[in-house]
Length: 95
Length: 88
Length: 183
Image 1 (cartoon, rainbow over the protein chains, first blue to last red):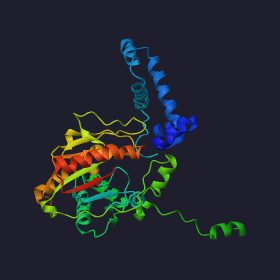
Image 2 (cartoon, rainbow over the protein chains, first blue to last red):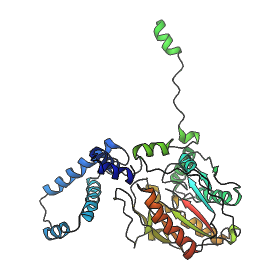
Image 3 (tube, rainbow over the protein chains, first blue to last red):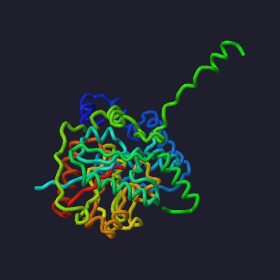
Image 4 (tube, one colour):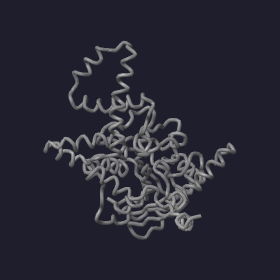
């Protein structure tokens, strides 16, 4: 959807349209694939944490103090980072 | 300010038609391969030369020149030469 | 053989649709419609044709600029943002004398495995450099331009990326002709 379409949906509280767009974006235009991709990044995050390695809490605290626009975009970056780590990368233009 | 002549390459003819671009060359190839396949220098040059010819000779805006080289043929050629260890 | 099975055997085999790779037709038919259905309002249609700009000089004397949506950039530059859900409203300058080893593609929305092996598959910078040496082209502008093709705000894209690149091409690069390449 265009940004104009999404702004209208957000203003009208039509969250399903916003969610559909997220699925399309992370699924390269395929909504079913996008649903699986969202699950995949969370699964990968859990897998990593199960290794019980040290984490940089100071960095997390300083990042969390940033503005919400930066953090919202970072959320997308983290999704793609984790999906790439999973080794099942779908973003090759084939969807 | 004078305009600058342009020419585009497209593998999505329907999109190009909708945009009414001044000049374009259409190839029936996949996204990510507008100039062919790796190391196939002659094919890459051929696409460029077709674009230049279109740039120089198109007489009306909206010209789309079709360069119909079948993708299956391009892939077969690339595989053959790759098997021979050749770069074109 | 029964009459029923004979009828099945005698029936002509269903004709498979022609493989576009063999037929030489657009590989992904109806792309504009497909994308506009998935992302309403994201695709552009023009109502009128742009009048052709006339050549000031033959190509052998002309300076060419290449503008690409493949997202290529110098390895020393910050990558364009491929994660942003609406696209990246910036662009990168790519020196026209760059070597492939200096360049990288950071992209999600199209297959670039082959371009990673040979950048000329989407961004024929070496081929253009050769053509200048051979005299087929007069020269190349100091910089080429690259941006990300994926974008969900065509109007903002036109106000920013399109405007800024056009301005740079006309006033800084002094291009005579432009090669526009999607990926």
